[in-house]
Length: 386
Image 1 (cartoon, rainbow, N blue to C red):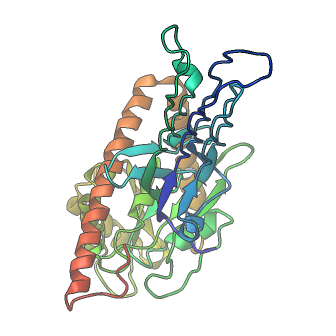
Image 2 (cartoon, one colour):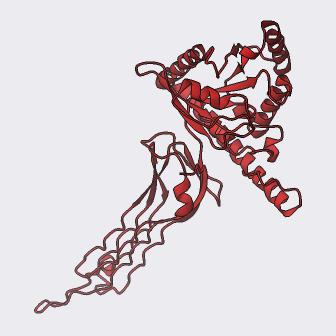
Image 3 (cartoon, one colour):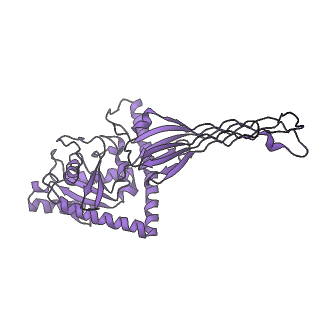
């Protein structure tokens, strides 16, 4: 199935049923009085995350979801049947945004989350409700309230522990193939990877993490160049970013300049995402001698003002990959322990997620505006798909 990470849908809650106007009419019973029942409540629309789903493609084919209406009340004080609620399942990592108010309704990062996205209408009242000592034959009823109708934008951000970042042909797909069972396409031309790929890296019994590979970035991606910034949002939920640098690019470009370009595009897209923990990984180090490699490392430290460790690997030969994965596993295990035991850490992570979600929505909207302006003019890139 085609990978789709954005969709717009309309959800309609059910209307409440009208109240009934009725009077008791039985032989030998005088002045039976009112006995019109209330209507039933309209059904509400709920959403729940499902770990078995990994795309929003189904929502492109079915963009409208309706809950049942409540039924009208009946005589003999019978209440109308309430409308059944509707449960819509979305992939884990989906953000739900009201397109009219720009309100973030839900951010599904847990399969136990169930969120009401449209409330059903309240039932109408039958005439029995209005009887009193001074009004023994009321003819008043109320109609059911309409259910909520909302237009929602669904944005899928993949849930992974490690995200791979880099230029096209930096070796991201080769790395994920080397350390997991994922089999993304690998070729010697740019943008071989067109959609994100996930791979589970197993480090032994009950020790594993998920790695995400997204299409490569080029300079001007935030303005729509190449595949644009469409897939950058999938890095926002990761624990660690691995910035892969090809030490000997096939196009003979400068690795240092390439690294700087990636950082700039990341900062344009989301300053909060750019501030996330990032590891610098040099790939294809088997192609350089020790002196050239050390010179490159020093140039990178100066250009990026990098104070942390720089890791050397060769994804093709798997050199250094086991050691890299073990370091990642230890970092992720520490992160998981802190999520369970450190409330301040959990709060800080939640605030970080909210800030990134806001910046990502702004960047995507700006990219759409630029795309629309380009479509109206002559300078339109057919590969621009935000």
